[in-house]
View 1 (cartoon, rainbow, N blue to C red):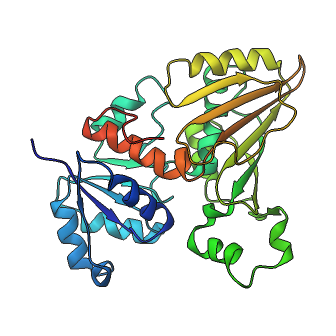
View 2 (view 1 turned 60 degrees about the vertical axis):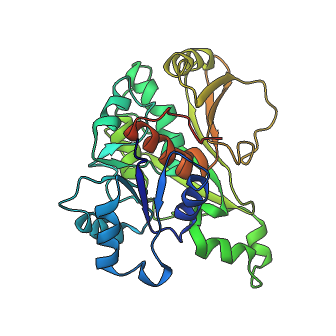
Amino acid sequence: MNKPKIYIDGQAGTTGLQILERLKEREDLELILIAQADRKDPEKRKECFAKADLAFLCLPDQAAIEAVSLAEGTSTKIIDASTAHRTSWVYGFPELDPDQRKKIKEAKYVANPGCHATGFISIVHPLIQANLIKPDISIHAFSLTGYSGGGKSMIQQYEGDQANDLLKSPAIYGLSMQHKHIPEMQKISGLSRKPLFTPIVDDYYNGMLVSIQFELDARQVFEVLNKAYQDQPLIEVEFGNNSFLYANAMRNTDHLKLYVHGNEEQTIVCASFDNLGKGACGAAIQNMNIMLGFEETKGLR
């Protein structure tokens, strides 16, 4: 049996490099590697797309759009890790709905979810589906992330010689209230209003904690979320008694854990996962496994 051929367009970036390193360990795949000197050559890239059974796009948005045109006319399946197609392609969150895996398996084009959006949607979507909250609710969420989420430039900023004391404290960003993950948060969750979203980056490499507060009974929220994810191998729901939750607690894993805390009147739900795992690379490999007919969790941590 021929091994599926995999091409990573943008293999030098943070997500692309992680996918490459992890797929190198797979004996059931064949990687198509492009020479460093050719990785921006359209013709060479086009050749790689033509050879591949599946390609990952680990590129900025506009470059990802251009890359799709290079693959036109081929049967190559594509997983796009950029923001470019998340509200138009099949959304690569297998746990979203009972038929989402089937949609991903049959799709030629799949959009890998954004890291912040993964945590947000995992909380909000089931609550809307269960009619516990209304689609027109005004939701405020905040999200703590490690600096690897900002890619090579932010990693260099935090780890380079020019790092200063300000970088040792949490930093709020996205202050225009137009973070690029908001469109998918709204559409995929089923909201009719844009959420109010505050992303925060801090001085640690990887890990993420997305938190949302509701005026709801915590036990009821837990029961809805627990039912929604009870058969999902990569998502766990816990009714918590934690005094603290740490944003890097799920680093270096491909799982997502939902913590429900609160009382009969007020609830906080926190999605804990790795921004480079279930928030990026792990999700991409999970989607690849589904699209190529492998066991879904193969190669995941």
